Length: 213
Image 1: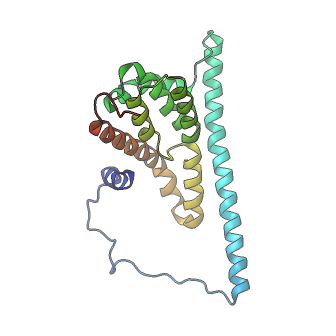
Image 2: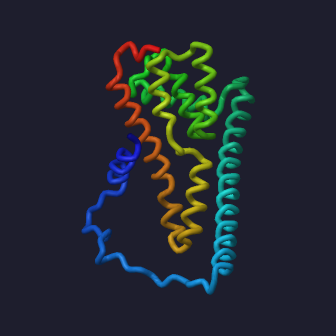
Image 3: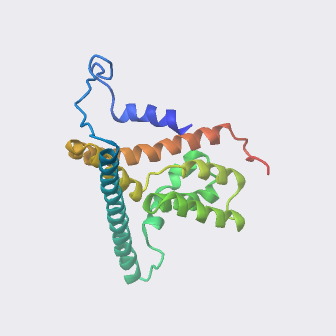
């Protein structure tokens, strides 16, 4: 569901207002360096792979660390006034209440699902799914909210993925570094909204009382 939705939403972010250049006449092959033998090809591939992996790891560490640093500052400010739970997760949980309600989540669960979305957007979806599993075991979410949250969290729109995407694309195409870094936040928003749209469709097709176990 998310693949065609992502393609459609990307056209909204980047509308094709001019004649498309994605055709055989416009696409030309560039000169590719040839390897002298198998060993030469293996060495070049290993060197490029090592450089790519290094760039991905360093970018992931940088982005995740930066978000953790900002989260620590927010927590410290909350701690000064005696509010220990103040964090990105808490803020996004409040901000996402209207969004989760529009997706079809029961109002009693809106903040809980909003916090899960905030957790996914500031850390990653694996941590958010783990937290959701704990809430399901404790009976904190009803069946409908659980299914909507499952769709809403299903994306790689998180700081680590941003770093990984920048590292991969800039390594493969270093001449387009400025274009990639300029548009990466749009991709983050696009991935997040795409999952919201699929969650909304799932909610629309679901019975009011949810799906029975």
